[in-house]
Length: 471
Image (cartoon, rainbow, N blue to C red):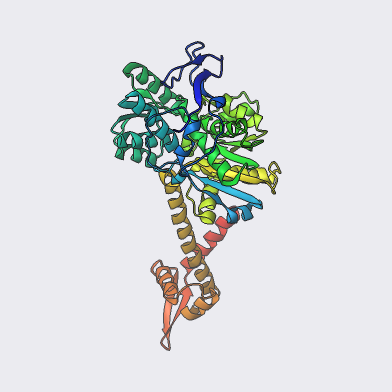
């Protein structure tokens, strides 16, 4: 029979210990919200050897004990060697931990699996959580599989792709508040009022226990890397990774741990500000990386603890840097990462440029969720593509017009001057468009069509030149 480590809940603020089966989220002594954490007694476990399939439940003995195992085959996600991306960055070894390969395409499936298992053990039939996306989608899916009701409180700004998942999994959805901070208050009140299971990721201590398995997997896949870069919203994820490596040390399985680097959007960087000792409030907070859009992170102090104790860093990057990194990951490694995850690559590029990371180091970037969920980014990319196509078409017409402005000429000569970079049929399509707009005229001589620029065409070229001077 598989042995389990003995674990109890303890308040990280006042030290109060609580021996209960239900993972409470509020300390009975000091009233701290989200301050309870599981402490594992490793002496009760003895020697640890991971065995079984490479998936989430492989680490069952190091998590709080559950009798039921709710599963949709989560965990065991790939750790890719990103060679092309590493080369472009000038980095020796870069790995991408691809959590998009989980059942609902995000790392939150680990937490949903453990919490729904706990619900089955305790006989709960309904759960509530506040979520700005991934946790709500994951919980809704696992509750659907096991016939439980799922209530998700969402803020105003949620990626439509994640909302679509919640809807199709038949969650009861309520919008409350501008940010997930306000949604959290509503979720706490509902849990207290109805007795529903509290499954908000910032409140339920099982979430940290589930997410620390990412650290266990990285260790089994490549050992202990020099650096791990993690996006931060509530701060719980980076703390989970730190806790996982700390426990591996406590078990005597490794010595030392990676340096943890936390990333936030410059549009909402409360943890980064606190790490840097900045007291200023964030004016008009906003970011397209909605999964890390948290104004008052419940796990802020824990995130900073993980960063400082690992000798790490906290850095903020712009939404533009995030979008560029998202395209870079996809183009070079074939992984479509959500914006928050892409921020890890944006931060890596900057830290390499600033020599804050040695180019000979090994680096793991955590890809927490799929970009297919972030439809606002998809719309931005689509608009950018359309604009690029329009600009390309406009540029070709301008070049053709300038060729004709120099001398009367014909289609074949124009095609040659353009370097034969497109079909002759395409050239004649552009010529027909220019003619229909009154910018060129055509005369037929000896069976060949010759094109001449009109006065209107010359005015258009002058206007283009004037605009270029202003730019």
